[in-house]
Image (spheres, rainbow, N blue to C red):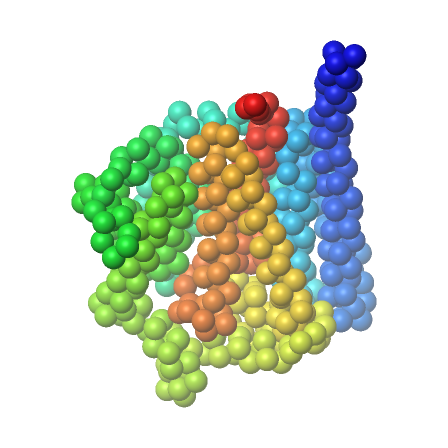
Amino acid sequence: MTASVETDTTVLKALRKLRMPQTQRNRELGLLLFVFVINAVAVALVQLGATDAIDWTFLNYCGGLTLLVLALHVVLRLKAPQADPFVVPIATLLSGIGLAMIYRLDIAESSTGWGALSTRQLVWLAIAIVGAIAIVILLRNYRVLFRYTYLFGLAGVLLLLLPFVPFLAVEENAQVWVSVGGIFSFQPGELAKICLGIFFAGYLVRTREAMTSVGHRFLGLTWPRPRELGPLLIVWGVSMLIIVMQRDLGTGLLLFGMFVAMLYVATGKTSWVFIGVALAVGGAILASRVLPYVTGRFAAWLNAFDPEVIEQYGGSYQLVTGLFGMANGGLIGTGWGRGYPDLTPLAHNDYIFPSLAEELGLVGVFALLALYMVFTSRGIRIGIAGQDDFGKLLATGLSFTLALQVFIMVGGVTRLIPLTGLTTPFLAAGGSSLVANWLIVALLLRISDAVRSRPRVVIG
């Protein structure tokens, strides 16, 4: 009798395990269909609000992107059936809302509604989704990345150095762009953060024993020994070098924050967090005193409404107009196509969040922040559920990096912190950012599928 009960239980567990992948993908498909409707309605409302007519041509192009996302869904059913079902729908919804806003800004600048911004965003979004599909198909086992830890570290450093190559460099306010043959330009720092994330994860797995060794007890905390501080100080120094040489405060802060977060996850020691925060604050104070452009950013932040600061070159005009735009949106917004987001410089890029806040209101942007929160929580959940340290650190580090990037950008445009030159993930115009963020989506999908497919060891 006991053997019969155990056999029945085993059969039920096996059937449940076979049904789980199908359930995950069905849940994802249901969410995607809902997302497709929201994205299509957003574009249609932009057209009706701004032109009182619907342009079916642009909607058809958006339908092509929908087919690409469905292709990714089919690939997941075949290649990664147990991948997380929420990651792709959230990324698709954020990308669709961002595309609708960029298209709305194109309408404000062109009587036909078509412009370079929305066309370029369509193309880059298609490339990004195709890249995600390729990663899911080709990267059958994400643990292969662990073998090439130092190679990815070298690749990350070389990507950061590309803007200094004379025939590739693009003359901008911040030296972070490269141009290939004058045909297209991209920001290598976006891809560098993924390469360095893989390097940090692999490096910390190899050295975590040294990082967790006994240190010195002081002020209720166990502080690491000086020789264990070396890697943290090196990454801090590289981050400061990026700020000095590339005039890119955002990337330097992002990479340092990613390393400190992954270091905390690897060791579980809060002393690393305190040291990291102290180094970040100290570096920011030092940069604000020594570097003129950082001094200007702090002046525009602290004295944003000073008329002299508003009118000077590189002052707070952009920040102030963005704040007035958000105030104009109020609680529920002016409605798609009914606001004036084009009055703010770089509304499609650095200031796409205030543009959305004006037309969607406080309720709309809170919904967007909730989507980012869910995306980050799913990524961290994937990392926590993992049984190998490399996957845990990689998933957690990439998810935290995306969340930190959102905080830096939203905090900058709302005057919570000084503004830095980063893009809002999935929403802002920019091919480099889109491709990098969709590659992060693909990596999270692969890690989550491996986590759920791996048999668990049960003790007792």
